[in-house]
Length: 148
Image (cartoon, rainbow, N blue to C red; front, side, top):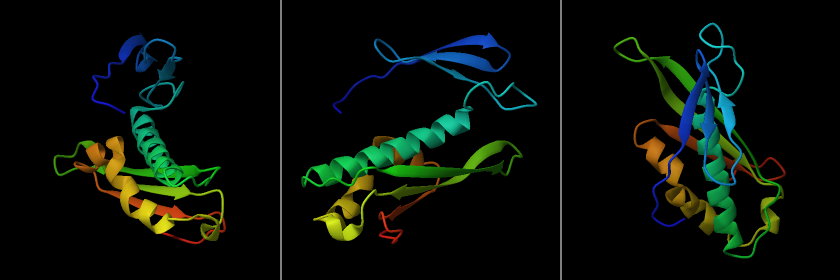
């Protein structure tokens, strides 16, 4: 991705429910806070943040492996965001844990160590969010072996 300015537009629908527009050709989505604040009609801002971290890490790892003509598909990821109160008593995302699973055993992937050593550094979202929120990243192969 080159240098760019990214703009999204949000329009309140009702209470804490917002319709989010991403621009030409990209379907919008509905976001909402969970009850009791909102109605839970869509992902919450914290869920969207966790999804962005997991998506970016998965994309970055896939890109790093495809540079070496490797096919680790299908990838899957799970991101957990711990939400709690800060020193001022305000709710914050205190830390996150991202677990990325490759779709194949490590033995089937060439240059795996090199890709694992560098993919996080190229993940725009995780590096940006990680400057303010600790993010632990784990990677497993398709056989369940922890690689990172």
